Image 1 (tube, rainbow, N blue to C red):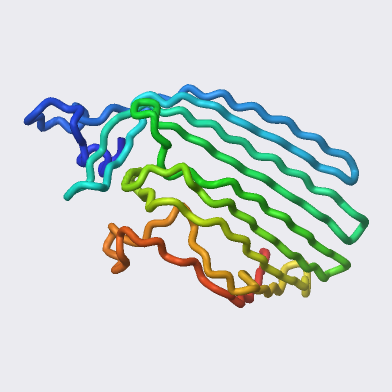
Image 2: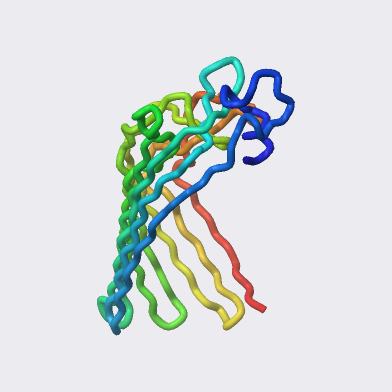
Length: 227
């Protein structure tokens, strides 16, 4: 447990104890990870997955007058799929899909602060010193939530809506050391908020129980210098 977890101890410790470690036990995870990769001249593909049991998972409850942390048992499952394909010498397409699932085994409820299903579709073009790319990020809504519960850095704020964001970028390598890049993120000025979202609770001046929207259409440029 870190400082905030120890000194937000809840009901597990003996009454009147001045030893923070009597209140919160360290987490113990037993997890199995598997993965596979494939590669040839044109195609790259990969898949990974995990399943785990967490004993004494540290769960924060933000619903009272003060934050409280207790130990629970939890189950976690997740995976990621990815593929990249060279269409020809200039064009390349890629796609990834990621999913995570968690359950509060002690209460039979959803485990909070779990990201929703997410896909990323990309297309890039490169010729000589020029390159350009497009990225479409598609995120599903999240309905498996535990309102007012979470961890030391965030809490669930109810169900979240899905969204899709499209971005473009381009670059030109002036020399071996210098590269110029520019792009536009959220090209269609989509109004959206991430499910894992915390705007307050740390003196930032934002409300602690309101999702903060992500930036709208954003133009950017940068210079990279390698030495």
